[in-house]
Image (tube, rainbow, N blue to C red):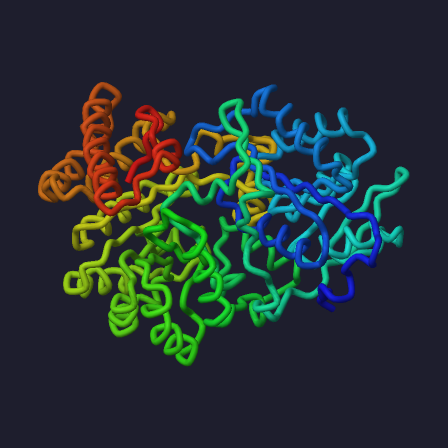
Length: 527
């Protein structure tokens, strides 16, 4: 049963209950804003601390000064409950920040939520009083209500409790079916505390950027082996039937109208669903009819290859779509099917590339590298596929990281190809290599193919030259030769990123926020 705000609001004269929420390296975190908004709607006072913003491949522990600033907010707000949300790679940071909070405020209960506590609740619960598994909006209301009213807090669905030396485990409640029950994310200024560079400002830091990220749905109809979705399916024992849930068009447009009125710099909207616009024709017709007149801001989205249909994309472009991001991941059908658990979409992607010559939208393809199962034949297939694609396009390269309990991680552990200490949460590889940068140590073979992939997307590099490099690959993979080719690709990448920066500036999307996320020359991401 979904809690409703009417039956949890504080009684007249009841002492306010203050919840301080915190997230690390995640200024654009939607989940914590949904939880804050749900608690606020239910009558609780909320504050949100953003402890640093994400910087690609440049994550470090917060400084002592920054931790003290966060502790100061908790003290000032007289918190009754503290919530910390984080992903697996930030588990070591979360433990340290939590230790410092408990030292300063031993009597304030702490609840953890997010994908890592959802993936590994047994590992997390010894460190805190509560762990929220799965969707947190209703669970947070129930937990805060029980604490405020002094009722039983050990039987709340989705919540593990650690009380008096005993661990209480509760199964998750059903997924929220009515997505329109969700409030709009909390984007107020007055209850946000942004801590960065040993300084703190009271502001909604998301409003510093020119891009607004929105989710039209939850879940995904696919079950890729490397993705967190495979974890959530196991948590909810869902095989797909009701796992993928969409908001109504009116609910989405309401959020975007609120955003337009309160975000001064927005120049682009990113529909950040794992799979966008797979909601049926009636939904699509309503969106296409209403979005241009009521919102009218250019937008981009992620689409799975089977949805790259010319008729649909033509209509979406007329409504304001300017960029499509889709996953290749690998040009090898064998790697896609057997290792990624994906249906190969190469033919759909090639067809999309051809008809996009007419549509002229920006295209971004996702490619995953650093897969220990990938043979040289698979890497060569990816290189050949990228050279088949019509230019221009960009590539977002992702280094394969091993997240707890994904089906790929379980397979690699079983096959002996992965040490448990290399799984994120224990490992921190994604602090330095999530999006691919070329300074990361790789074998000569992997350097060669990364260089080829990088060159393939550069309009100013002739495909005939790249094919010649592939034909001579045994020569270029030699230790005495690989660096010359690798630095050539690295230099070409700098030229591309300079062009990308110019495009952002020309469209009014280049903010200091964006520069800080991507701006290190040494850690410059490859695309």
